[in-house]
Length: 94
Length: 94
Image 1 (tube, rainbow over the protein chains, first blue to last red):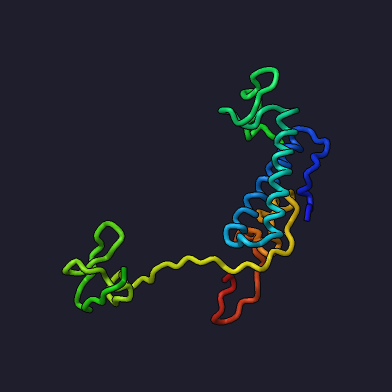
Image 2 (cartoon, rainbow over the protein chains, first blue to last red):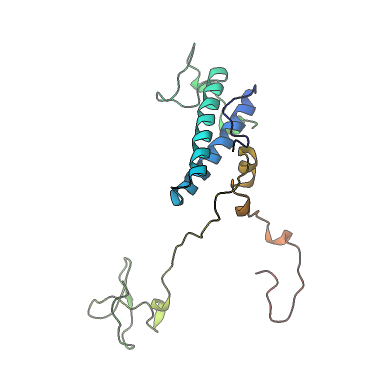
């Protein structure tokens, strides 16, 4: 049941990638909460794993083009130190 | 909590922590007819959710605040709610 949670990241600009990351993270949280009370639901678990994979790919695509999303060793900064160059939450347009 | 019945003449005293107590240090009965100890205990529950059938795609889920269509509860400020017919003895806005 992909429903937009597929694992292929389409060509997007940084704002679009950030919006997709936020949407996938929200879906993962909601599925997480559902699975907390329905741990044996195989369809929900499959969806969760698919969304988690899509989220990881989208985060990787964002960081490859737009810069690191996390610091303290959670993301690499390629070429130069770009952490402080990322937009603040109020500077994003997603 | 709520193990011991107290005399109707005993006035419960709040101990500053989590209990109302009566003379002798025994816990107050929750249904004691005197004072705030008449209050019922709060009860938390998880409403049974229908089987996992369909969900919104990630973008729709983010916009709705849930990935489950059956859980969509859009917030409508009270002043924007449409007026409904008022009948004697009934509240218009439950």
